[in-house]
Length: 460
Image (tube, rainbow, N blue to C red; front, top):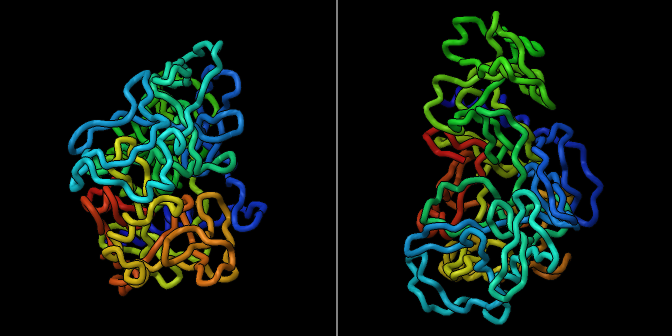
C-alpha cells in the first residue's frame, strides 16, 4: 500500500508542491495567483455592475463591481431543525443574535453567545447585495424583497451576499464549495456563487484541495494517460477494458479546451486540452484519485491550486497523504460554526476564541499552545499566493496582533486561518489529531490538511 501512496505522491502531489511564479508582495500578502490554464465558464446574463472573477481555490465566481466574491446560504437540515435562506428569501438580518438556537447539539437553546460586545449581526458579517429600486431581473438573477423592505439580488433563487473577510478581488476567504462530509453534524455553511463550468454534457466538476477536479456525471473521476498524443488515444482494446474512454456524441463539437477525435470508425472520444479522457473501472468510490496510482495516469484538473509554502512537505499516512511542516509533522486546520440561528463561523482570528480554546485546551490558552501549537513561519518565509498567508497572532488570546508586538507569533495561515500541528503526532505521517472536537471535529474541531484522502473511502 505504501508503494501505491508513494506513486500518488510523485504523480499527483508533486504538481501541488511545484511553485507558481511569485507574485508581487505587499507586506505579507500577495495578489491572487491564477494559473494560465484556468477553468472556463459559461457566460450568463449579468445585472449591471456584477462580473465574474477568477479565484485561486474556486475557479470563476460571481463578484460585485469591486470584485468581491458573492455567496449564498443554502437551506440546511441540522440535528435539531433547519436554517439558512429559503428560496427567494433572506433570513440574514441586521438584528444581532445573542443566544444559541439549539440547532446543533450538545448546546441547548437560550445560552448566551460569547463576546456579545463585539459580535456582529448576520447582515454585518454577510452584507446583502442590495439592488437599486428600479432594478429588473436579468436571466437567472432575480430580485427579492427583504423583511426591511429593501431589494436584494438573488441567483438561482438564492439571496446573494459579500463577506467582510474578503479584502481584494480573487479572495474567497469566507466559504468554500468543497464538501466537508459533515452532514447534519456540521454547521449550515455559506457557499460561493459560481457561474456554470464550461464542460460538455456528461461531465461535472468538484472543488478539491488540489484544484477543480473533473468528474463524469456520476461523480467518478476522469483521467488522462501519458502514453496518448494530442487528440490521439494509444489505449488499445485490452487497455480500454480497465480505462473506459469517455465517448462523445457524433454531434459533439470542439469548443475552448474541449475537442473530439475519431477513436475508431464512427466512434468519437472526448479530449480536454487535447488529452483523451477516460474513467477507471476499478474506482469504487466517487471523487477518487486511485487511478493516479497507476504509472502514467493522472486525474484531470480544470485548474490547480497554488503551491503550498516551500518549507512544507507531503507525508504518507495510513489514511492518505497529508501536508506536513518542515519536520514532517501533520498540519491541521481548525473549523467551527456557532450554534446561533445565523450560523456564523468561529474559526477565524476575528471570531470568538472560546470555541477553539475549549476544544484544544479546556479553556486554557497555555495548554492549547502545548497541545495544538501554531505552525510558526521561518524568518525568511514569504507567502506566494492569497490562499496561504502569514499572520501575526497573540498566542494567548488567539487574536490578530500588530507586527512585532511583544510575545506575538508570526504563523502560517490557510485562507486567513492559522494552521497547527498536534503534540501527540510524534513521527512524520502520524495523524492522531484527526477529528478532535465536537462530532468528530465537524461541528467544532480539527482535521488534517489532506493533499489526498481517498484511500479508505474518505471523500473531499
